[in-house]
Amino acid sequence: MNFNSIMKAAIILLEKISPYYLSVATRTKSFSREALMKYGIFAELGKEYAIVMQGPIINKDNFTIETLKLYRYVYPNITIVLSTWPIANEHIVKQLNDLDILVIENKPPAFSGAANINFQITSTAGGLHALDKEQTRYILKTRADQRCCKPVDFLGYMRMLQDWFPLKDSSILHERLIIVSLDSFLNRLYGITDMFMFGTLGDMLLYWDIPHHELMPDMVTDNPEMMIKNNTGEGYFVNHFFRKLNFSPLWTIADSNEFLAKYFCVVDKEQIDLYWFKYNRYFESIENRVQKDFNNLVRRDFIHWARSYMPNDR
Image 1 (cartoon, rainbow, N blue to C red):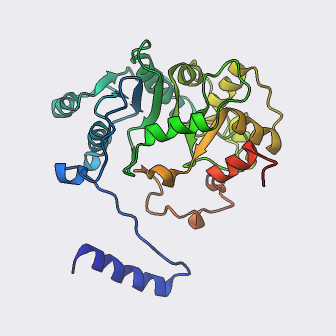
Image 2: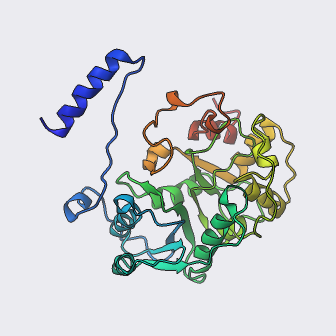
Image 3: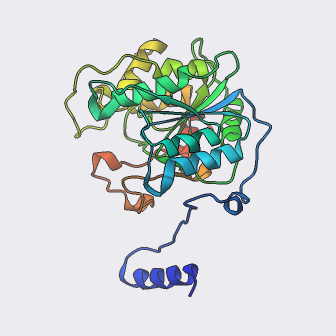
């Protein structure tokens, strides 16, 4: 029996004893020349585009290197930055050099901050500042433990969304910031996911180049507004962004939706098949979210964002 036959037999068996219909999503682990052939090459995107991948290198299954191998194949002419921590493995360094990856080895911060927020500030800002400010215009910030698996021009798609949905009124941002539905929750007020963002270099620096977290906030989990209001996790970024935009949040659902509609756009993770090699990767179905769990609220998708962007459209 081949792989597909074995998986089908297992699913048929599991469906008999479960209340769900089941399916399997497969994604290539490593990219040989043959495996890369199903992907397009988007050579028309040049140095005005960049990918900044931040965070520690994931060595299991050579995940980070294989992801960079895919991105370099798909986008042969853009700048790709890996902003990480000191690399001791010379073989990894050689692989990165062979892929023409600009590697930034940051000094780890002395204080991690809540949810390791200072590590993210250091690696993200370090990667952004390494870019050629005269040449680079559009940047995707992503993580070393995530991969856009769908064989599409995801950078061009996000740039297209900026053209489709121009900023209606902003003297500070140049373009709308594009975020992803993964880890973005409908009932988390002003909930801007911190793991994936696309925007102009100036706008990305506005969002990510901020001081380190100095205090460890209390973890409040009984009210969805409090994660952002209390500066927990991505809330620290959002509150700095409020100040830079001269925006005063009202901490209401309506104001939160209006804020996201004005400055952001949400891409469904399925549109780019963003895969997170961590946590609940075995259970991707929205049905498996536990509604009472603060960290697993209903996901904010493009359709929710669009309703806020055009509230009177029917």
